Length: 535
Image 1 (tube, rainbow, N blue to C red):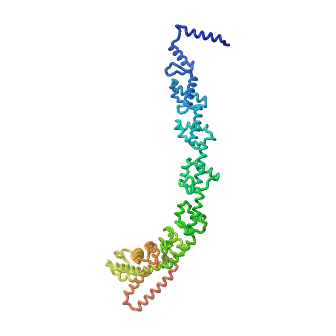
Image 2: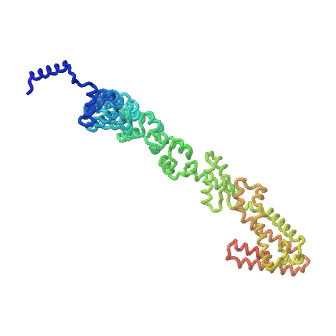
Image 3: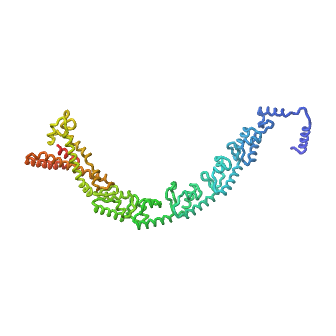
């Protein structure tokens, strides 16, 4: 065991050696060479300073790096540590990595060394910031502390006290702050007396969308929400509507309905009420409400309007201007409503037609057709005169013209007369083509309707289409009568008994034709009739 005397003796020997002068004393350069040889032979493990005048062991260097980190508040840049220790960066980096591997309380990130004390300090500063501002985002904190968001999350997540701090996505909240915002939302919802957009409420509360709906659901579960949402939560048009407002609106609409017997759809849209018929009936506590494109009408009022239109239809010769009638009743109705009413009435009565706000029945159509009979007869006469004049024009073979009136085919030849074989068959088909052309061209129903000035311009096209079959039939009748009269006038010089016999045969043939064609449809019968008359 070493005694105090031994220590004193060793100290005196050391002092004597230091004061002694010897020629065998090593110089500084020799010492460096000796250390270098030992290092090259791996007899010792040391790290030289940049100037080569000093060296330190790797273990001691790790301690120095640790001290540098603690001395800088738990955060140290390896570049700055290398400069302070006068050691190459590679040695400092290797020492820091060994330190992190041996001690979990240190973290190495992006060339910086962080200690556990630094993370604790950040946590304390976070509590102070949350007490001051209520919330802090990770982005704000990273900018404030000049560290990356990734490192901040890794250092603070484990340190967050869930009793004091709430982490929602990338935002830290103080629980007291969230509770105060919830109370603000409770007050806003209680104070609202008319619809208000959720976006506006959220802006006043000052919470993110997720935290806002969490607070809203908590209040709803507590029975503190006295209203409803007008749309989906994700919709930009979502609004909060208080129950008090709904009650006032429903009472107001009931009063309007009782006074007017109708409610406009535009008013419902303005008030944010659904346009569904069942919902409207439930709100008004009424049944059998008639729905139009822009109106909801009481069933009794609607039937009164329909009965009035039917009466007006009878009194005005089968024509009724629905728009004029409804406007006379001071009903705010649109064209779409008028068309809807007209279509419903037309569906209930087969003899009534609807078009562009007008109603007209078959009696009206018959009256219009009767007004056109004179024009139809005149047109048929002019058309037959035109055809006869075309036949009388000089042609290569004029002899068959004499037999034309007896339907032998001579007068039906077109340009150039008969050419080649089979001309007789072609001549028999020609009147049918002439008939098709006369059906398309001579009958000018719309022009005739404009001339008589009995049909409103709004329904002129529709009326023309409806009476077209009747006009065509009358045209054919007049045409045939004119043709018969023409034939009769040509042969007045014949014996009267022969003419009477000819008429009798013609009438009998028509009766036989009518009996034999009863089973055919109207279209087929018409075609057969044309062929029969002309051939």
